[in-house]
Image 1: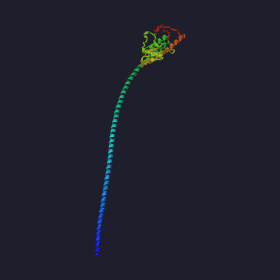
Image 2 (image 1 turned 180 degrees about the vertical axis):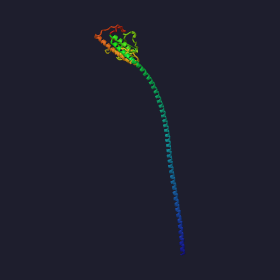
Image 3 (image 1 turned 120 degrees about the horizontal axis):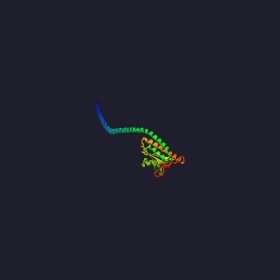
Image 4 (image 1 turned 90 degrees about the vertical axis):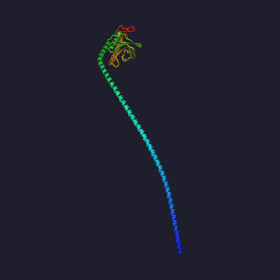
Length: 304
């Protein structure tokens, strides 16, 4: 019994020893597993941390690049804005300078224009005053001219011959001009009528002859700066031209002279036509007057 008990004790001790060793082995295995798992976890953590770190660095690099690009874009935008502001300021300054120049030019132009208008106004006032004086003189001369016109018309009416009509027309015309003369129509040209006194005839220059010729050809009054020519018509045909030298075109007397000479010329033409018709009908006797033209032919009752 003692041996069995001892054997059982040995077996228990052996079993206990085995258990202890197995438990130690298990613990060591567990420790190894735990250590291995811890190492694997540490490696995984390190790898994850490294990956995260790299990703973070990449993200940071991208952020930095983006930020850098944005900063550079902002710098370029700021530079462009600054340049645009500088250009705008330069343009504004140019506009201001041009505006000041234009204002100064306009002011100078207005000043010059006002000065010119002032001078023109002064000259106009002086001219108006001079014209007023001329008109005042013309009013007095108008009554005299009207009286001379009436006497001239009456004198032409009282003429008994064609020669007398011409002579009285010239005499009446001289009261309304600086000098007058009659030119007879001869073919294609004109010829001085020499019925009046030789020393009283008006000498007509080439320009005056051109004015008289145009009047005869165009059958109307023709004027130049200092002369007027009137056609003398009988039965619709121009037989002579009254040439008279008058004042300049701006003179108030010229208008009165022109109207008076026109009236005298038209009236003389009607009187000549009446005398011619009466002589042709035998109602007026022919009057022979010893007045000859330059050809030596009688100019008594012969129409040009």
